[in-house]
Image: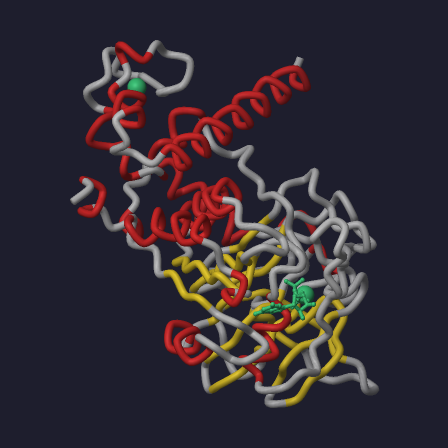
Length: 358
Ligand SMILES: Nc1nc2c(ncn2[C@@H]2O[C@H](COP(=O)(O)OP(=O)(O)O)[C@@H](O)[C@H]2O)c(=O)[nH]1
Ligand SMILES: [Mg+2]
Ligand SMILES: [Zn+2]
């Protein structure tokens, strides 16, 4: 049995510093920058849940109705850079048919994407980094064949999600097109104890299983455009109303029809946030030596490298037990390659930041 079977990936050991960082980020959001009077309060009967946001207003589920609300007067901020689907907000008294968002309830967590990855269609491209708030579980949706399965992309997501203390699962959609190669990739994650579900959105294969792990949670679908996130949302909702995208035969990638994230309630206390294609996620917060904390299968080996601060990166293989374990086939090469690429990106990002500081 491979040694990493013993690890439970949901139990990532995180540095205290990192935990505090995630907490600070979740609690604050952009609210404090927007207005110091926009104080974080406790949930009560005047609260609603943010379904969808636009430049200057948001759709809120409030006392069982969908209402449109703006940020309270005096807050000089863009609505969809201030509140996000899944946020709980305090709604003020209705005035001449208008509703205002007066406050925001402290967030459990917030998921953000990288600065460079601004959605083309979004009016605040390049500015807003947050996607959704208060997420209990994120499902990384990948697909077989169109577009093909990429472990590197999954690993990046796992890192971000685990850093935000968000439980994750992987859903291989279009499993009707699954290859042996795909099966091998999925096995990597089954071994590190990430729940893996296989679905065919169109004929509802695997949908009940998906429902079982999502029930009672506020969940989010993340993943590339064209993998079937909206089709799966339709399957959960038992409708076909949500627009799905047409996958271009040339690129194998979907054309964006979902341009902003949207919150759907598919059962009692069970909701799903459908998101547009997210190409990459913000990893600029990570320090190079923290990356390995998200690769629990390295742990047994990493401690025995020649140098105690070994990054298992440019260090020669003779002194690096992790590299040796990869060579011996004990640690998955795909996972190591992901690690190597993520580390490279973090190091490059850091040196760019240093340049800007000067
Ligand atoms: N073969 C196959 N195609 C699917 C499946 N699910 C979705 N698709 C197709 O994949 C394309 C993209 O789906 P969509 O839900 O819009 O993806 P999204 O961009 O992730 O929301 C559409 O043409 C769907 O009809 C599936 O399970 N099997
Ligand atoms: Mg979509
Ligand atoms: Zn090493």
